[in-house]
Amino acid sequence: TLPNDLAGETVLVTAGPTREEIDPVRYISNYSSGKMGYAIARAARLRGAKVVLVSGPSALPQPVGVERICVTSAAEMKEAVLARCDEATIIVKAAAVADYRPAHRAEHKMKKHNTDALNLELEKNPDILSELGRRKGHRTLVGFAAETRDLLENARKKLTEKNLDLIVANDITQQHAGFDVDTNVVRLLAPDGSEEILPEMSKDEVAHRLLDRILALRG
Ligand code: PMT
Image 1 (cartoon, helix red, strand yellow):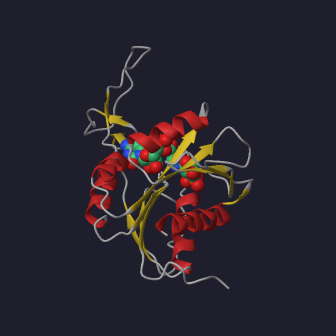
Image 2 (spheres, helix red, strand yellow):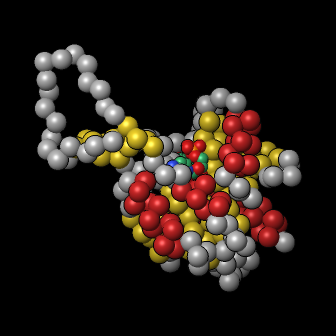
Image 3 (cartoon, helix red, strand yellow):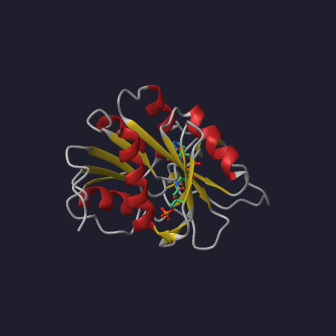
């Protein structure tokens, strides 16, 4: 049986990729399936929290008892998260948000031309987590960092720069870890320099270990 230790908490979770449209038939995105974020949403719900899940495009079913808000682009995800962050006591950003989007979305399907190269101009997306870090209040703010090199250095940098309480460092070069698999290999890094190294486990288990850690932080 699970503890009801998140009763009274409102957990806002983001999951999945974002899609940045190029034209009516094409987009830029990444391999996120939503599995990690949905596991966190389910685990938090099972432990008694009220859960709001802001999800990019994902094939996963809506978790029972969870309010899901479906979005497509980073701009839409930002809007949904900012609309719901005030009521949250805990925010976990597992989504893989596209850092850039096409500077211009073509109204009609782009045609193939006779040139061999095509340049696509990109512009920066807003960083949702940094925005939340600037208006944190009493909320516990947790980010993820998916890295292919210098895992700890890059994750620590995001932890500090985004004003987070915890970051989940995700080494995506390892088998059975990261995008679109049911398991993960992560470390939980806190601003005091502490580090909890978790062995390979299911994303459901990672979710519970993460929530344990968040509760310990909240004291
Ligand atoms: O969905 P799955 O298939 O289960 O895969 C899980 C996962 C690999 C996507 C997940 O475990 C993970 O690591 N998510 C973070 C992915 C990532 O690449 O994050 P990042 O390093 O680009 O961003 C760092 C943090 O800032 C993240 O919490 C991200 O949500 C947030 N961010 C990033 C960019 C942006 N414009 N806005 C943001 O809020």
